[in-house]
Image (cartoon, rainbow over all chains, first blue to last red; front, side):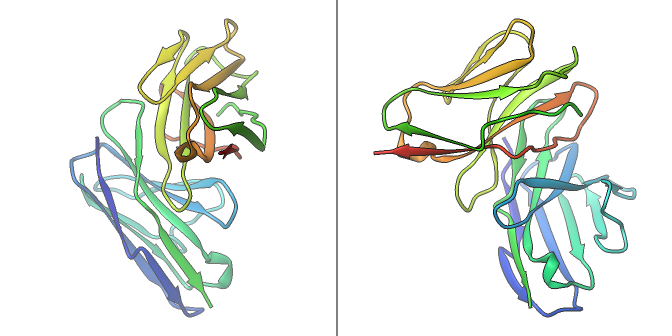
Length: 114
Length: 110
């Protein structure tokens, strides 16, 4: 199994600012992903964080708005840039080890943009 | 990715079995069927997954129809801690991403 820690767990941000969320896994993992979960909704995949290269973004998400880093096999960051109230959401980091079926999740980072 | 269809919500009495259905009529031969659940204020957690045969683990059982166009997650004895949103997800064996549908919100009645 893998334990995933996210920081911050929650934050209140001003419109127009940017916030970086950190994701730390307690073991090396092959795949890391970032999801968004808006209030009362399901999870939407933002991107796959690729180690040592640019992230792979899903339709509707772009690097300028959600830059992602993954410098090694245990750590990734997601930045939410130039925030607006529509970005208020829970952002979840997840990871897979090898080719097993199981996906592990962090507790999420709840962002409120005023 | 193939889509899944689940009821929006279900209720169960405590200590009774719960059968959570999932339809996936466009499933392909290489799609695995995964179930995750999300307890309130937590990230999703793995429940079970399978390809063709029924599967059992300590949390639940997964019954897969012979034509694989539907599956059922079975909680053998619901507890209050099982109240959560349950997601049925298809993942191609060659793909890495998991795409979540709307899920079923399970309420367990004491």
